[in-house]
Length: 147
Image (cartoon, rainbow, N blue to C red; front, side, top):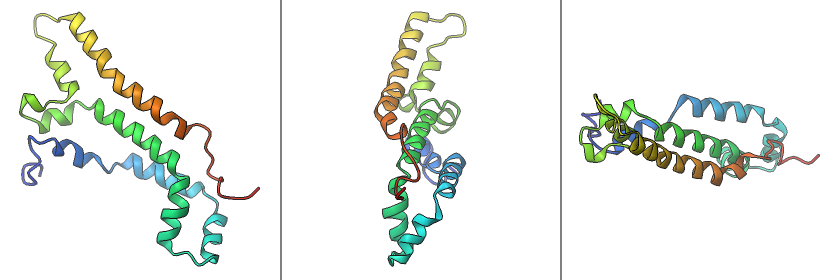
């Protein structure tokens, strides 16, 4: 399937299949089920359409889920090893995790190089978490309702 779609040995072959995940669907569904019906009903009483309710009412309060899923997706894709190894054939297109594995030889391992490269590989994950953590902490699903 990947070859027939022209995604083999292409970075799009890594990105496109991983956009929609069951975990993301589950997280969004669980979050939207926890939102009180009063918020949706009040928007309908005001004459809002379903699209307006979703994009202007529901999606802004789902920002914590979007950011959490962004962090998880980035972490999963950044640490992915098997899928890039299957899809990519050209060593110049290898992801960092596949390239790290190529540092390990059958007879010897250059530990200082491997540990230094592993620490460098952790830095983008740490940066993404630091940037996005403010969107996750201290949020509430009932922020659109009056107390």
